[in-house]
Amino acid sequence: MRRSPVAGQRLAFYTIHMKPFLLTLLSACALLASQPAVAHPHIFVETGLRLVPNASGEIIGVDVTWRYDELYSLLVLEDMELDADFDGKLTEQERRALEGFDLNWIEGFEGDLYAAASGSKVTLGPPEGRGTRLDAGQIVSRHFRAFDAPRTRVSLKAYDPTYYTAYDLGIGVDLPEGCKAEIRKADVNAASRMVQNMMGDEIDDPEADFPEVGEAFADEIVVTCAAGS
Image (cartoon, rainbow, N blue to C red):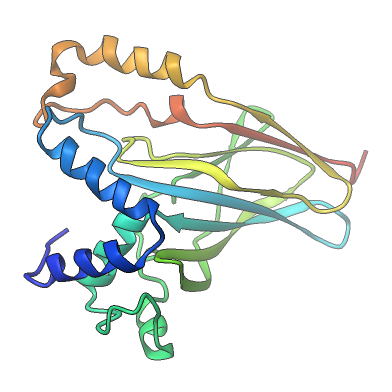
């Protein structure tokens, strides 16, 4: 993403006024810049999934919340020339300008959310925007994805195959009455070893092709609902 000459001013303002751990984040980024670059991930997104039922208690879709990390949020605001007064708040006009900034998906993009049932892919509909806001320096957006058919059992994984963006379930999973979820945690250590073995000495080369390993770092959520049982 391009950066204009005012980026340094914005970074300085947010370092002073945003919550204290932003300073640690920026310092860590500066340190990493002087080290051999490990290519991924670059963007960190806390994810929330709210399963949406129909009147029969079957799941018909999922409401997705993305909370972007503070550094990426800052760069988006700077790139879109929002929050010009650097107060960490958006006017209503600015909020409307930001609305849907992350929903202009290219053809074939899966939305970094993958669903399956009985071993087969569940097709998710296009994103339907549910709002965007700025919360304590972090952009938070919501959208809805409809399932191709009502489901009583479905598994979900939030991940970027290229692992450029790292997703976690920090916001949580919200279930309707009559449903339960099993969260199968990814073995991050095993995934990291896999990447190391695949890339070898190239892992520190920013120009090297990075394998599509995002799924190996993704937790799986298996949702089962009582409807129809």
